Image 1: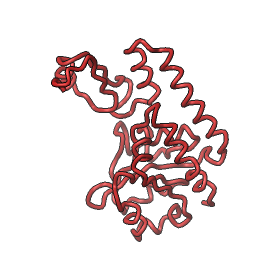
Image 2: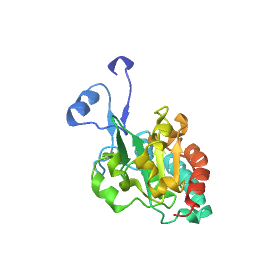
Image 3: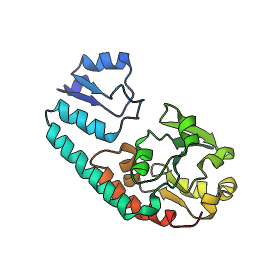
Image 4: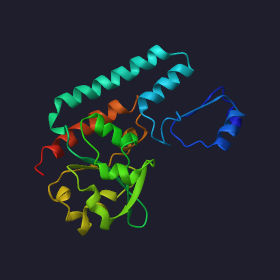
Length: 217
């Protein structure tokens, strides 16, 4: 980092402890996430506004936020079938485990901004973490109205998950109400959840979410 000789360091989607902050600040002024949120839990709107304030571009930051929020609101209004349906965002972990994303995670926040609801059980199990681990024996936790599998960075994950007999037994799987985000670019767009990536993610995902949400429970 020091070799790059930066004028400013933005560390807005990474956990920066006191030691790391001191070392980064010794290189250049460093801006981190708001202490009002857990690690990786700050809404993208806050991140954009922090950058805007830091660069003296508050008005532009607010305009960018408003533009994306309007886009999401339009899609939400166009798809009333999303409203109130339960959702979970899951990923393939190591050695037969799976990650379930917290309601504070950018991936889950995108889903709730479209009208979906993350079950309280997931919120309780996640706590302040951005995700928690389950085994396939705990698949009932993700037996929701629409299940989003974020597998774009794991080649072959969709086939592996879909072939699992425990997963196949879930109503959400039987009814075809799972959405597999297998495109690496789309997966990255929802993972980073930025003012630039979200419009792309919304355009790519909404048709798939609509198809899943339209299927009977």
